[in-house]
Length: 325
Ligand code: UDP
Image (cartoon, rainbow, N blue to C red; front, side, top):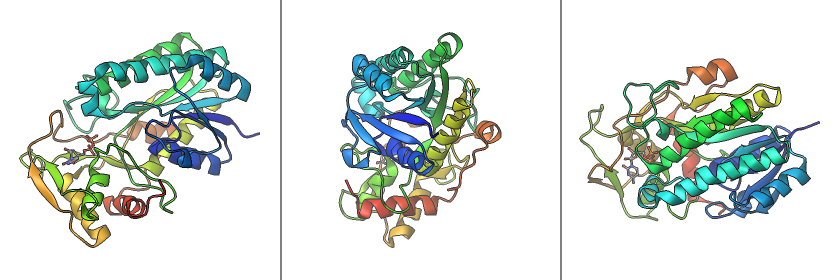
């Protein structure tokens, strides 16, 4: 019998791609989303529209649906907004997750895969970043995710929760067949902004800082394809369903790519340069971030399939040229 999974935040970018992969692997998927940033057309299975802070609704959905597990993608995730409006971030990300775990407990659902972030580490003391790196997040967004991780660890120890947290590096790319991708009302991420600039749908990209101590002066990040992220979720879920208590893992390629290298790859994918203007450094951007992902490779037998930035941005370009929503 296939396992039944409630995908919370499943109408968003990473949640919808993971849901599609789950369905492809034979899981029974129901989506729960408030559609504040997600899209109904992206959701797999039945869509329940609701807020994660609505514990009564979550409890009813979980009880009546007889679920085996929850995947939790629902969060506010704009770093700048979190600095301006921190309470929203603690309310939705921390309070909402507490509400979800209470509902899971009431409905006797024990397995949870949680979307975390490399932003919990803050400015790197060393690279690549492994899971033991000290956690000093520099934004309320990163801090809210760190708080949730602590809460989940405590619940793993004392509340019969089996939980794995996946610390994403820079999620990128779209479904290679163009069926699902990234469409945000407020877009802050490099790849979609740069593609839209190249297509003439947005002003020239502001390149934030060219005087970093890196190989070409621009920031280095670890771009991980959304399908590789989805695969990490499925592997983490299968382990929990088999009875494992769960753990925390970095999910990145281990390869660092500069902003200029990303722009060059987009230029090749589209056959036209990305118009850009050099701008001041963006507050809070560390010069370089990339993952040590040995732990997830070793323990969950995961490894990234999309390690070439050219093929990652090609999938993103395909979506952005012709988005479904
Ligand atoms: N970046 C940029 N211009 C933009 C958006 C991002 O130069 O309009 C740079 C940013 O400074 C960082 C990298 O691109 O070095 C990736 O930023 P993004 O916001 O995509 O992800 P983050 O690393 O902040 O999670």
